[in-house]
Amino acid sequence: MSDLDASPDAPWQRDWPAPAKINLFLHVIGRRADGYHLLQTVFRFLDYGDILRCEPRHDERIVLATALPGVAAESNLVVRAAEALRRATGVTTGVTLHLDKRLPLGGGLGGGSSDAATTLIALNQLWHTGLDVQQLQQIGLALGADVPIFIHGHAAFAEGVGERFTDVVPPPAWYLVLIPPVSVPTATIFTAPGLCRDTPPIAAADWQPGFGHNDLEAVACALYPEVAAHLDCLRRWGDARMSGSGACCFVEFGSAAAASAAQAALPAGMQGFIARGIDRHPLARI
Picture 1 (cartoon, helix red, strand yellow):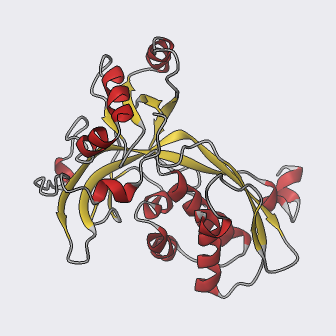
Picture 2: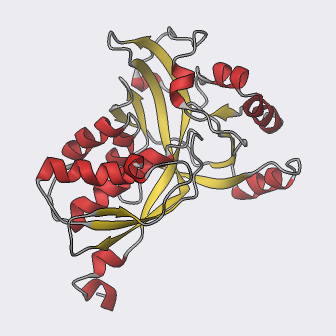
């Protein structure tokens, strides 16, 4: 046991990762009476993302120390997640939340949802609230449809509004992810009249790597030409796809070296990163 682990304050002194996700495919197969879309997708985590740090307080306030430009603190998903956990458990303890933000807003990488899930996982331990995975997922679903997958903690074929999971293990891969200079509001894509909403469903057991497409991609490309341009650039190396509702796009490689070579060949000004696909969330065992 290290000195850090032996300290009674040790859990508060750690970093809590909030990894990105990509959608290996995303089909819209219908729509519920309440307006929510029925989806099928495969979520995979990346070894790249945001970092959350939690600091105990001696009062009952929830404070976000690192504000995001254009996002009110009370609207930030880490604050909302902390408040939701307190409402569900009756805890009154305060916390200061420090968020090292690397994932873009409106990028389709699940940044806000991942931040919220990590907040729930971290504070469930730090506040000793004792909720199980299913209870945390229920709280998370009220915050956003993508939050439960990060609490579930394993790459998965997802159905419903994205909250029913069948674990999958995609082949090892590295991804070149591009970040177009635009933020794509999810609601704008899902309310577009031209969105395909009737792709035939498949059984989870029938999914294979390389299957499908992203039904949201055509709408995003029509509304945001920057997304289309970044996809076109990536297609020189393979089957490039948009993640989620956009704007980020990715293409798969069999090695980090191949991904790095492609990144080096990008046109000047195109921004992105290379990440390895991972099948378990780094906090899955907590």
